[in-house]
Length: 410
Image (cartoon, rainbow, N blue to C red; front, side):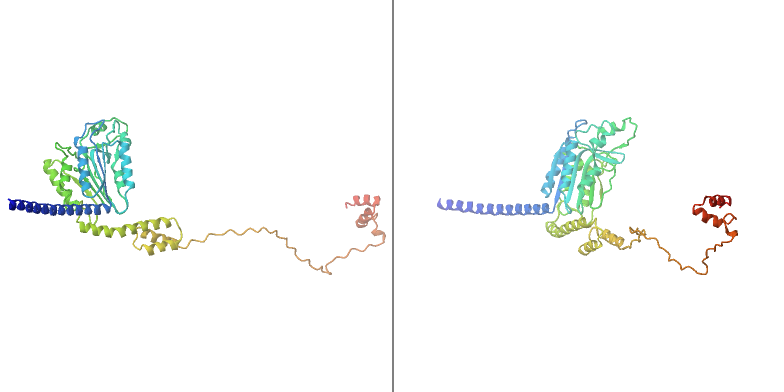
C-alpha cells in the first residue's frame, strides 16, 4: 500500500513538471509573439476601419459593420494600431479621416478599409455615410465623402498607403440620382470608377470598375471573407495576397465578381505579416532615414523663401540627394545670373547755379566814337535847325527849343 502511494506521488510530481514545462514554453511563445507584434507596431502601422450597415435612407447592409469589425481584429493581431468606426454619419466620417491623417508621419504605413455603399458620378468616386439622403445630384458634394480626399488624407511623405474598398455594393442611390431631372446632367455609374494610385499607394477594390460587389449571404461579403482567409499569411507580399483573394472571390461568385487593384508600391513592397527578423532590420534601417527626412524637410522650410545663395549651397552640402536638391540647384543657377543694370536717372542738384557772367572786353579805343564837337556858328544853333542843339536846349528847360525839337520830329 505504501509503495502504491509513493508511486502516485511521483506520478503527480512528474505530471506537474511536464505541465509547468509546457506552460512555460507556451508563455515564452506568447511573449515572443507579443514582442514581435510590438516591434511591428513600433514601425508605425496604423489603420482606419469604417463599416456602414444601418442606412437611414436606403436598405441596410447586414455585413458592412461585421466585415469591418472582423478586419479590425485581424489588423490588430498583425500589429496595427486600429481605429474602428461603425455606422458613421458624414460629419463623423470627415472628423475620423482628419484625425487619422493628423497622426501620420513620414515612413508610416497607413491603411484605410471601408465596407458600405459607394458610387461614382461623372468619374468621381464617393463613399456614402449612413445619414446621406442624396435626393438631388448636388447632394453628393455635401453628403458624400470623396474617395480622392481620403487618398490625399492618408498619403504623407515617404509612407506606404493601403486602401481596401468593399464599397461597390448595389444601392438605390444610383437609380435615384440617375432619374433625377435636373438642368445639369450627372452621369451616375455602377460600382466605382478607376483610380490612379500615386507613388507608394496600393488600392484594392472588391470588384472591377463599373461592376457591383455582393454583400454576401454568409457572415461576411465574398471579398471580406477571402481577405480574412489570407491576410495573416506570413511573409507574403500584398500583390500576391490579393491575387489569392481574387481567385477565391471569383470562385465564390461564379466569376461574376473580380477584385481589382491599382498599385504603385516600390521595393520592398508590403506584407501584412512580414518576417520578424526582416522587419526588425527594416525598422532599424528606417529610423535614420525617417530622422534624415525630418531634418531635410525642416532645413528646407527654413530657407525656401530666402534669396541668399549660400543657404542653398549649405542645404546641398548637408543633403546632396535630399528631397529638394533639384529645386536648390535651380535656385542657385537663377541667383547666379547677373541682373541687367537699371538705367539711373541723372541726379537732381539742389544747389542754385549762379549765372555765368562773361568778362567784359576792354574797349577798343579806335572804335569809340567821339562826341561831335559843337560849334558856335549860326548853322549850329537850334533855331537854324540843329536837332542836337535843340535837344540840349530842351533838356535845359528852354520851351522854344522844345517846340522847335517837336517841329523837327526829334
